[in-house]
Length: 161
Image (spheres, one colour):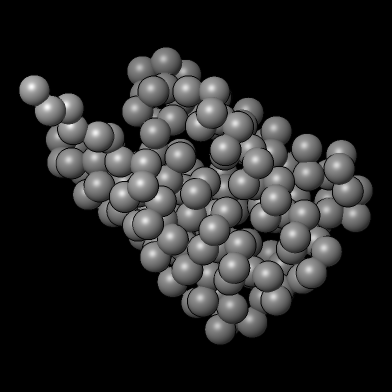
């Protein structure tokens, strides 16, 4: 569990700081590597926290990622704020879809919820940061593809008898 929280926070902070330093040119790379990892690790945290404080724990985690980004680089403040708003909106969308997918397999739930949360995150963050539409669309595609890869890599392993 702690490694998922660490991965989630490290990915948020890395994404925020690279955007703050390099600007929109890093947005699609960040989306594929870091944000896709966040979207997928959020699904694991959802499973762990579903009946045990999911809302407040995810809110605290998202806020912590933005705060750590700001503390490490105060000039990343506007990026950290946009990140907080976008991740909060995406987390809500992700949770609703993940729950709606019910008893389906982990890969179906993770990828299904990632498509919706990737769209929400891309539009909210990209709009708040003034990104051109092509970057927003590129981010969305990178998050969906990267999320599918991360979901596959982090999928539950079947036990053999």
